Image (tube, rainbow, N blue to C red; front, side, top):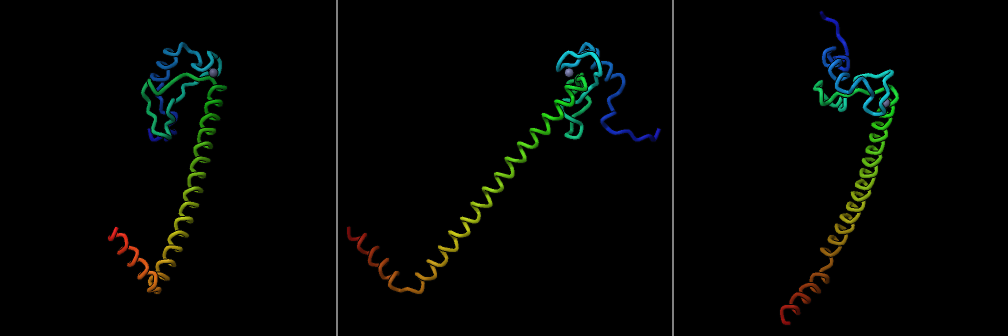
Length: 129
Ligand SMILES: [Zn+2]
């Protein structure tokens, strides 16, 4: 009692034995029978539970491969996120620039009555058509 063990180790002996038996004491990845261990399909850190469907037998080699694969996936996702942030930052800058230009144009138009007169004449001529 009172001993704290990582959640990873919380697969009960009974469950572990059940998974090994179900998988015929072989790695489900390559069929290896040495250095096998019960592994979470969805890791416990991501909320994967101890249910039999989330457990499988893997050898050490396949476990390493899987870890590498997962970290490769994480790298790919992180790169995609970085690119998206970069693109959005660029678009945001361009949008700000456009707003600044529009603001300057609007202010200069506001101070230039000719522009309003031109616009008035233009609108009036359009109504005649
Ligand atoms: Zn294997």
